Image 1: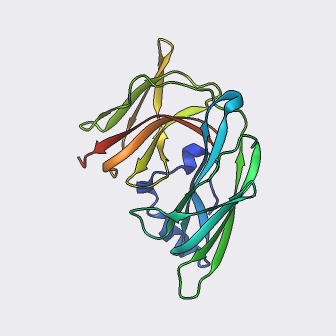
Image 2 (image 1 turned 180 degrees about the horizontal axis):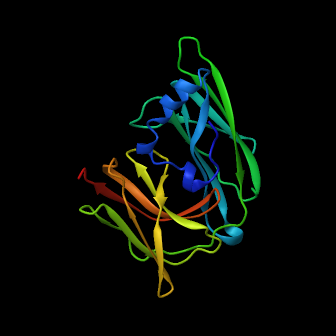
Image 3 (image 1 turned 90 degrees about the horizontal axis):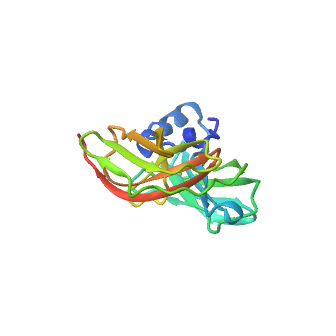
Length: 227
């Protein structure tokens, strides 16, 4: 399966990726892993911008172990909590401020009686750093309508804004989709209706995005009902 290269498309919500393993297994008999979620998480802005690669992978067979290599450093993947052992995630150990482009190499071993190896690569690229932005107050959530709303200032170089979420004890934020924004009095107002399959305690945040670069703000926990 071809890895998607746009954050809005590749940072899939965990509840929407459950069918991915069966798709891989029926069409790809050899053990393989693909990046399910990946982006460069920006901290700081301008000359102080730094980037941390965040990667979640999925295999067509259970994964025993996996590692990623980037900028000559190695990071080990760990199992994604509350999912099958088809999924693993990794957040790069140290952030980098000199990256304009680079290859993140993934190596994985299957959890089978006779283990098999698989590899894949991600090309990370930075065009322009995202400008800092501020969210007014905290993101609001209405459990009756399942709508998240927020107001924030614009981020320079942003191509759009997405709602990020982190489920359970997972370390990885993923995208729930692009926020529908309107401009009012020089501020951006955004809304997004949460999917019906999402429930429980989750963390949400607004992210400005430019290609693979993501700058998150206003992270907070909410409790999502099953209605």
